[in-house]
Length: 148
Ligand SMILES: [Zn+2]
Ligand SMILES: [Zn+2]
Image (cartoon, rainbow, N blue to C red; front, side, top):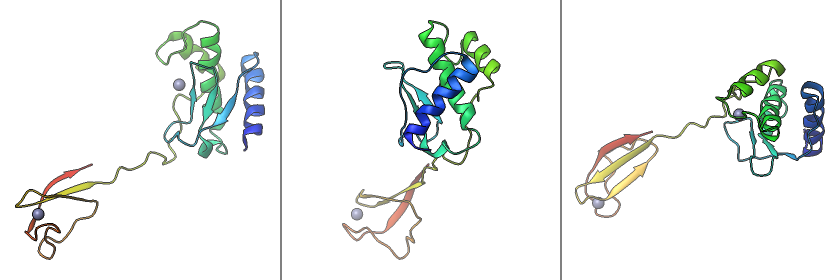
């Protein structure tokens, strides 16, 4: 789906399920990683995750963002916790959450090693401390923290 198709699709979903026109812009934002879409309060535009554009769940995502959109423009409760939001979302059968399709990026583990001089070395992989020494002073290294 390209951005022209996206714009047409959002307009169509808006008319079909909300009986109101979508008169702002919908576009893809590649920086959305874990969410399917976002309603921008400031300019009323909708952003969508391009990786979800071709999924069967995309309709539910578009509905979800349109619920924010129409409620906000109508001065009704447009936040997730508002009863207006919950009711309208249920009525149009929008998705509650973006589908989890493995977009949540695994943060790599960070291992921190330290030598006797206090030089720190961060690695994502375990290193063999019997074989490797500090690159700056040549002292043996010790694993001190493992952070996720
Ligand atoms: Zn939302
Ligand atoms: Zn050192």
